[in-house]
Length: 175
Image (cartoon, rainbow, N blue to C red):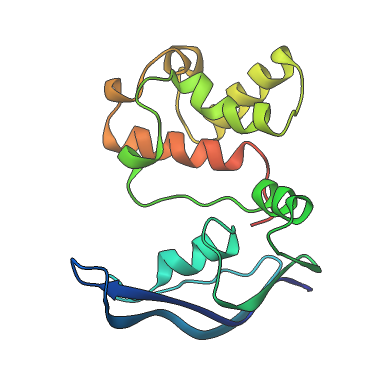
């Protein structure tokens, strides 16, 4: 198998400031982290709250810029340039632990799940609808047509988690 992700010497530090803006301390959220993931491999980042797990994931997707280090996804170094960002944001999807914070409460389920397809200009309206139906079936949200027209507040916590999972899977990410 080949490496799909390499993370080398990743660092992210935050400065704490007092109410007057003076630096009081330095928080090493991520300090010299390195790992690699093979295609098909499962990696678990475990640690207590505040240990940097989410920060690492956000740096991989470049939602947060690392202070230093290197991220290589599928042979391409991921930097802040738009072409590398487009590739990683299409092929790597993150599923947040709390579905309440990661889906727009004012959008119908069909629109929440189809949004990544629209962002990446994948398919026409009919193809997108078919893809949404398929992924809802895959995450066991049936009857599919009934769930598509609902809003998040109409769903249970487990159903919302499946919506978040369906949204991540709709692009068929590598990771």
